[in-house]
Amino acid sequence: MAKTSLEAIKALREKTSASLNDVRSALESAGGDEKKALELLRQRGVQIAEKRSGRATGQGRVETYVHHDGRLGALIEINCETDFVARTPAFVQFCRDVAMHVAAMDPQPSTLLEQPFVKDQGTTVGDLLKSLIATTGENVVIKRFTRYAVGEPAQPA
Image (cartoon, rainbow, N blue to C red; front, side):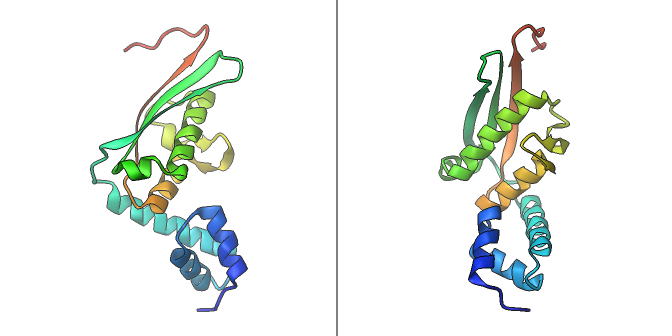
């Protein structure tokens, strides 16, 4: 394994929010190639998400998004294992991003995780979720969501 520069580690950590040890290990395993290191970190995130998937999620956050003209909005509930993680900036930002995505894309519950993320078409909502799970070390679940738009018929309860 090759040694990697501190600048490369810092740059990749800022992009992924992964731990320093994980970033260093991924860069060394990838021979300093950032794209390969990103893929290694993504794979590690998938493994972590799979291990955590059975854990109870009794804490979390309810988040809203209302479009600037007030004619479109979304309400979501995202759960995690502890209130500590629910208050972290990464979790809060994820909740805000998913609420905005729901308002913009009007997903069905079974398709949300497979949809390309509204802010970055190169990644899916599911990829963002796995990344958050890897970053926080906790199971995270998008529990429920609803979208509201002026003039659209009400959805059945």
